[in-house]
Image (cartoon, rainbow, N blue to C red; front, side):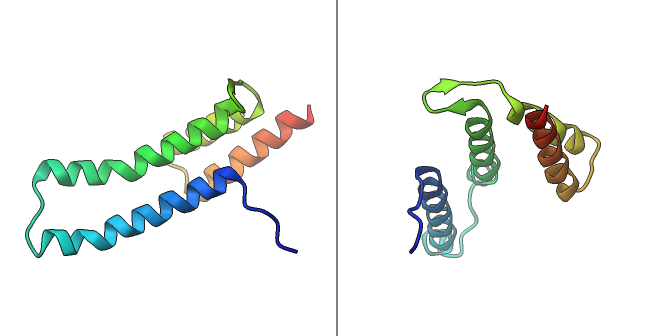
Length: 105
């Protein structure tokens, strides 16, 4: 039996499909022309902005309320790793370990 897909995963899949559609439509719409510099800046800022929105809502939201719990500590650990330019894998592991330890306490 296949488990039902939850609402956050539907959003992730929809954003992923939209991103692929935009990426595929770019060459068709541009037709070999270069995009204006402002449009290039906007396109470059879309992915980090969407990722940041998902991280913030996943960390500080619980239903319809704002929460401050162990997930925030994990995010802080990941941010510290990014700050010192640690590899991405180290940031993910640090966030998971700090979150797990905070939940265990």
